[in-house]
Length: 454
Image: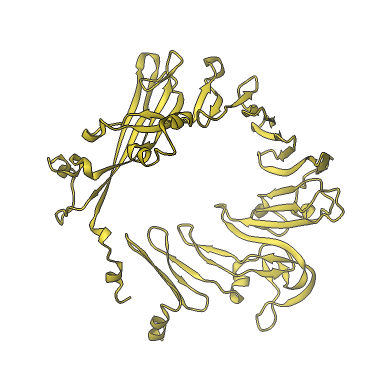
């Protein structure tokens, strides 16, 4: 648009902003003992430089920072953006910033949060004694510049962790977010494979039972003695969930009766209330390989109950989710109440009249079907067609429904950002990306372009 350049000019654009990051690392090296551990972070510091002095048109190079008058030599231009230091456990069993023990175990991370300028402005409310009581302590600047030697920072220690012995594989046993807070401790099974109990600083306990095939929980008792249980199939996929416990000192929730998960879509969709589970999932991954009958894309049937099974008003929500070989969603069918809907005749086709339009008829119940989504060669969604009602849950081929459906067309730039949207009506929405701003134009902004093209 006219005036776009002048409207985007800002004096702040004339300031060159640089970010300086400095890091230190530990290297554990003992080749005869088989120890070679590199890249252990020891410390990191971030600085921001605001330079108003103009530079040559060619820009900055690495060699420019070797000059005597380079911005890094001017402490007045440098502002600390943050620093942190990692403490490890040593061979002697205490925290250290020197060479850690092997295997390296983080004791805590020391993060600077306040500098002298901040503490001076807050000195009336936050004295040094109060800061110390809150878990702060004074630390020096890392990678000190000339002006940093007389200053100090106030830092807190976060993620304080203790570990088991070598016999138990140096696994974490307690964790504290910060020194003023209590520790959370865990207990593992005798093989040190899973956490079976967790206890917080208040003494509240969470326990878990596991499916040893997948080392995943099948039952969890939370701090309120509520039980959350789950079942898995042979591939470790969740097939059902339920929960029960106490409410107002009375037992409530789903009953503990046995529930057999259906093995087919028709069996799952024929289930009626009451169901003793909160949710049930049936996975049909080989439906496209059937030798007999109608082939369907891989799909998942999800049954969700809206209340406990002892309530006679329980209702079951049925949903079928189809996906392609890349796991991308193709179609979702959700069961609805009766009404007008298109008619499915099998093999992914719709019943159509002499005029080629889909036939509409009254049904006792119908399915709300999401429109098909089309993708480009990068897996980006180009079109998503509007939903419609159907008298069946099965997959509808795109060629049988596309004639009477409308969708917006999305176009992407090389970075995967939506830059143009051509609406189903033919209007244009456009987005312009620049380093300093983003311009969004809707149908009204591009209406004149459309009129000139007609």
